[in-house]
Length: 377
Image 1: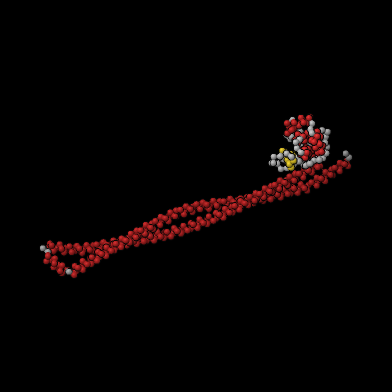
Image 2 (image 1 turned 180 degrees about the horizontal axis):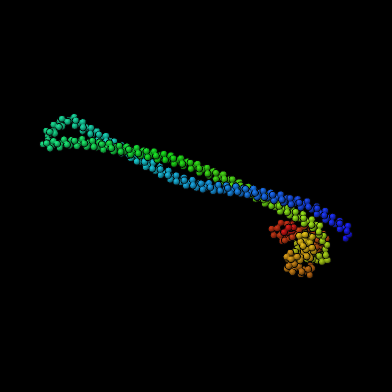
């Protein structure tokens, strides 16, 4: 190779490398921007989740408060029932006292009327009574006994009148006391009713507030899910950007560094691995397997630079490890597999794939026959 040719090749390599730089910078900038967006979305999501935690804490506090209010209401209802029973008892006592007072007043009035009659009779008939007593008395002792009887009757009337009067006064005092107690119970009833209304209002307000908080939690959780989906989409974009940057870099390096020249035994080696991996696959599948082998030879991601080295790389192809490849190499392959190998060696590389697997539906890629072909593992 002449010095001028070396200079031309060096200049060409430099031009290709410089051309690749803007794409790499662009991909890096894109990844950086996506990372910033992810960070912002994660920050927003964390803020929303913090708000959700605060709302749930408020709901828990309100539920505890509701439980406390329910206990207060139960106790208050018990007090109201007791107070109502006491009012009913007082009303019964007042009714009984009213009846006793009525009867006492009647008896007092009757006693008073009877005493008035006896006093009037004694004053009106005082002279006759005294003369009658003296005339009819057998002796002085008899006179004294009869006058003493009259005095005792008068004293009895006075005592009975005083007794009924005191009884009436006592009943009236009891009646007044019962009425006062009833008023106190009614005032307490009014106070308890007010407290019950107050607790009912607090219960209603707390229930409404809990419902509002629960609605806010639902909205916030939906927003958090939205942020989570946004982050997931950004992560996918980030992976795509990284993959694009990697692919751009690798393709540039491959285009610069590798131009594979087939060797003497490559046709048989390539035809044999195509047979072992895709003998029962359509012709397009055979070409795809051959393309994977050539792509690995030309890729900077693999250290093997020949078809032989790619096929016999440790842990890469099961037929090689099992010994089936060696047996088929010795026995020969079908004309179709040989033709597919020749096409690939002639440059008919049908895809940029570096890997293939039996298609079980879990791997994304190009499905050809029973295999799926893809660029990234």
